[in-house]
Each structure stands twice: as C-alpha cells, then as structure tokens.
Image (tube, rainbow, N blue to C red):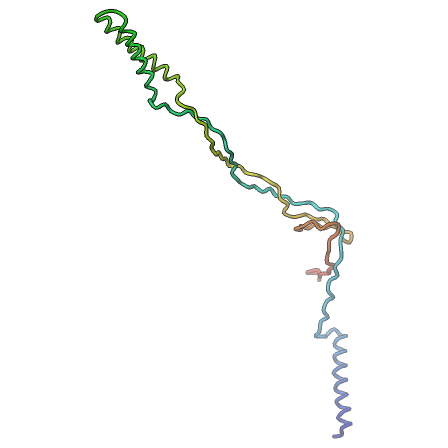
Amino acid sequence: MDSKLMLGAAAGVILAIGGMAVAQRYAGGSATVEAPAPPVDEFATVTRVRPVIEQVSTPRKDCEQVSVTKRQRERDGNVGGTVVGAIVGGALGNQVGRGNGRKAATVAGAVAGGVVGHEIDKNHQGGRVTTSTETRCRDVTDVSDKVVGYDVTYSHKGRDYTTRMDQDPGDRIRVENTVQPVRNAY
C-alpha cells in the first residue's frame, strides 16, 4: 500500500470517529457530564438577632467564721449549793431549842438549807465564760444566665429565613446561592 493512501485512510478514520463523538454529544447521548459551576457566595441582610439564654445552676458551700460564747460546766455538778445550804441550815437550826428540840431543829434546818441551796444552784448560770471562733457552712446554689447561641433572622431575595448560630454574625450573613432539583416533579 502506498504511504499516501495509508495516511489518507488514517485521517478519514480519525475524522469519522470525531464526527460521531460530536454527533452523540449534540444528540444527548454523550457519556461525559459537565461539572456544575461552584456555588457563588452571596450576602443576606440580618434583620434580627436574639440570644438564646439557658439558666445554669452551680452548687457551692458558703462558709463564714462566727464568734461563739459558751459557759463552761461547773466542776461540782451543781451539788455545792445543796451541801452548803444544808450545813448553814443545820448550824442555824442547832441554835434553836434544847435537847431533842435542838436535834429536831438542826435536822429541819439542814433539810431546809439543802432545799434552798439546791434551788439557788438550779438558777446559777454555771462556770467560766469562754469565746471561740467556729466555721459554719451551708449549701447554696448560684443561678446564672449563659448565652448558648443566637437565633438569627435574615432576608435574602425577598424571603426571610431563621437559623441558629454560635455567635452574633453582625449586620450581614454569607449565604450560598444554590439551585437544587425538585424531587418527584415528573
């Protein structure tokens, strides 16, 4: 075969294949799909920002130092007044009467003195007074408000939208302008 003939045949095959590919593409039978253009970012106007607030409870102990006054107990257990009263009453009763009357008066004086001494001991306030410092604590709960997000309302192309964000976006918000197919729209 002649080289010119071979070259012509090869060029014809290439043109034929290329022509079929172009014909398929325009006929809708192309196997290649064009990549969609990346979405273009646009900005929408923020019309309202409302902080979302949650109450937080924090337990803690509230302690303070207080001055406490105490009266010490007496060492004799409040029997000293009874004993002293009996002795004094007995001595006074011994001064009255003679013989068996004196003995009766002594016993009566001791009993009466013991009763009086006991009553005086009951009304007695006790021993020495001391002052000390004590720590007194109580459980309290502090309640505070915490911002957990922001409900943001914005306007884009004549429509209002609301979304929750972690921070306040300011006067405008970036939005994506995307077109999505409607499902089941046959």
